Length: 348
Image (cartoon, rainbow, N blue to C red; front, side, top):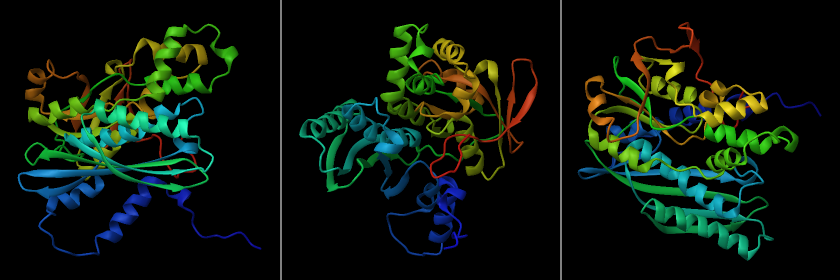
């Protein structure tokens, strides 16, 4: 039998598949008091916006599978926590508060009761951490453990944050360190002999960042309340990838220039990069899983809000339509919006 020449989804990748879906959905016309212009614009954003009086009900969903998202070193409790965290991170990107989450679980029939309880412990602990409720769910049987979450939040209409909205001259900032999760995963995947000279405390710290990420919900709320942020997204697929999202969402009418020396790459990332012969800059730019926020802020308001929110200025919004990096030697390089992408043949 001749192999099929029909195009496979891995030839497009997650981002192009979503664009394909959105293009088809535009052919469906309907009217509802719950939908407005931002509702349809939010289809390309981190979460959906549903008209709710003076507010938006914010809805998002994420799905995690054992083989793609849960390293063997991750405990069942950490798995439960992560399905909540990835959803809440989308709410943080929109500047919303968290209301509740619905969890669907597909489980192998031989999953032990103690492991099921551990997953639930992680889910409930994360709900408590983000001041939200577990409000429903479903269970089914599957060969592979799969967790799906649908999270609901609320944001005032005049405070909602989106990927679009950045303007030339805005400050580009991130809300925390970059590359710690990447360093943690590199440690997990390294051989024992490669880690002999690594400080155990550093090892433990970066692994925790990889296996127990935290959504920056409070930072997102402070940014939305400040009225100074012009666009925002969470850093899950890598800083360069998220920069590309902000540019695309603004119709490529903006660009971003950032400075290598301003990137908040912690010492642990440099130490692990040296031990494992990795590039710390790549860890910060392309690995993802940092769960910090990438935000653009009105230049004249940046100084007045940075004292109340952890913010690291890394660059500025331009009109280039591209991503430029000024390296430590002062040379400017054009970079592609590269990062992790599901359903893609090769991410790097």
